Length: 281
Image 1 (cartoon, rainbow, N blue to C red):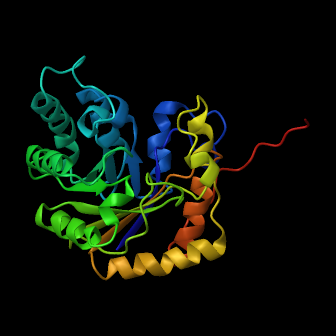
Image 2: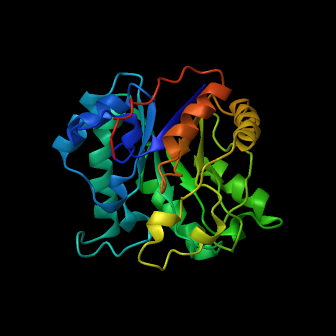
């Protein structure tokens, strides 16, 4: 089974009729895609009432990929909000548990930062994180190529299998040590995650600029590129029962169109985009 979706549901204006209220977007999104990556949880752990609205807005077969809070991944210091790291993980688990109980949790995504290289300290941190996340399905995405260089490739994949990490396979620019190659191997029999970040080499390196978010994922995949990935995803489908594909190339609003195109290449039905409003100007 292959599920296709987008990173977030609020910013894809080409999916919704003009004037759609923010609170109505998730339910409309679910009429187009059966999975979504929830990015807002990276910035703050939402309240119980917010999560309840998400669950109610989507059909039973819908799946959330919930991004781990930034304090859990080392992107930010957690201490202004939590006394200990374990307390932070417990708060996140409490938030995500209703989604899991409703059968709508595809996975939690732990995306470690670009400076998180392959070292004994970082391996120990990952082991502790996996333990604290208990029986929740968890995908792991690296952002430093040292995890897959030379003999470390097989050692990393073996570690992920032993520790029950779902592999997050990435398509992204190959421009620095803060990039990971495409590694087409599942580490979990139940699920593999695939994330499309685009191939904007210059934008990928602009993360220190104030406008980096506007250009980092600015890329539209060509049909030939998507055809190549359709073959790759089918290969991963032979290794995992479920492959969840997330398009994150939305700096220029390309994600939804590419996801629809990809679904069609897979032989899946893709609902049409919202009609465009006519203008005299």
